[in-house]
Image 1: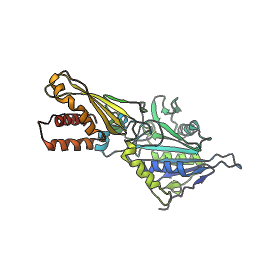
Image 2: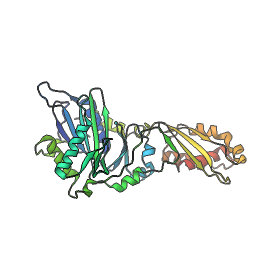
Image 3: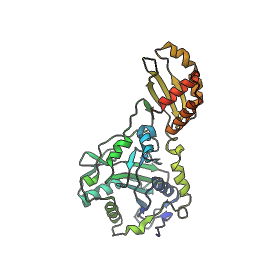
Length: 362
């Protein structure tokens, strides 16, 4: 199939639809456009340069640039169910995507950037064409029936170019939203941007005939004022010859160091039971760039425990420092410790107990 070739200079409004359903490829396309396309205002026309991109992803979770992945996502379940976790280049909160969720991105010059205009375009279209009671709240979310959030919004602003993107819940699996986003954050302390929970609703619950495909067609028509064939505006974000270096951008977005390692410094404070001790032992874990940076263990109520194990806390912390705070890495270290045996080695016993409990914080 021949795909539309996106120009590198845009002087008037244009719309594209991504043919790809991979979150890293679509985020890479956003990144590529931001870095390579020039939006030039024509002196002969009052029409402003803008690019409207419509795209969908297979099942995934997308967190904001400045967020803590472990605070926002049930990472254990995401890994178990092979659900991709991605970190976008823009700010904002965490969202769940699947093929029942439609994503919209508006690119333009920094001077012409206006998120309210974009949101009004979508809200008024939903009111006019689908008779939905959609309004914009103070946080620039789209709300239906004065109660339910159907869209979250985020943006990236450069010196010359800016883009604003947001989601539309059309027919998403909301059970996955609860399962993958609502996580026990016991003891986790972070200064990262946090998501604000809101009641959500699929638009298809109000309009059963509404589908993402139907919305794409209607948005394209509303934006271009003609019955455009979406096949003629499909782009392929996996085509490295059409979009040089886009595969590299895809790979960078998929790296553990970007998704998890870009998490701002945080700590986990927990109390763990130790055999033979009545009161749980307080442990504090410091994590920087996704790596364990320090471990502190307070004195317990048991003097025998304190005398036997606390002298080794510094050594254990140094040995675990630099280890990824990642379940498979913790489990690997635990297997290596178990393989050594040596039940008379107090430092090893403390390390085993500690790492085994750390796997439960994940």
